[in-house]
Image (cartoon, rainbow, N blue to C red; front, side):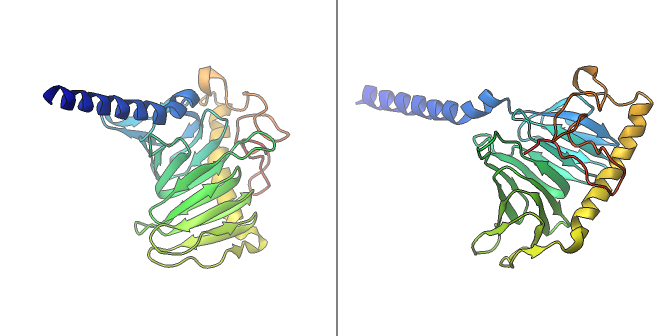
Length: 265
């Protein structure tokens, strides 16, 4: 009897171990890290073993690590499938918060993030981005998320493609956002209908903030202060966007004018 119980426990442990291996296989196959393509100001990552570690261009962020930016901080990251995301100032973002689910890309605790999901032609690249109040299901698109306060109030606006937004703190069906639409998610309140971003006012605000940081980066690049992975200068990494060259996400026009997003669609 004792031998049988021992064998059963051994088999159970082996099955659990095999399940963990299967769950983590997609992460290992895809390289679960995010690489810093460009950075300015104070950008750091919180690790269990080292506490706070300052990030610089070319460094990698691992799953479940927390990206933190200061008042002057900004960084552009790229993951293995070519998708990119920008973290703006005064933000706190958990990268790949769920180890067993590589589609769970970001959990935005506070601050503003812009996401560019890359996908092969004709295929959907499913990803999820979450906040304290929202779960945003992505099909391959360009969108912005701004967690505005400690209560988790979350603004989601879509530039390209489609996203589905669910309030994780209140019952109700998801709301689909089309290009040029936005929604604000409030804690413990059912979602309202999506609204049009009339005259592109919300997107213009995002572009202004983004272009401000890229003006700083261009100035650093001109003085030789910014380089990409492997020491390649920012703006000299090849064609990564739609019909343009340079670092993914780098504005190619003056502030306030349309920019070429990384991860062309």
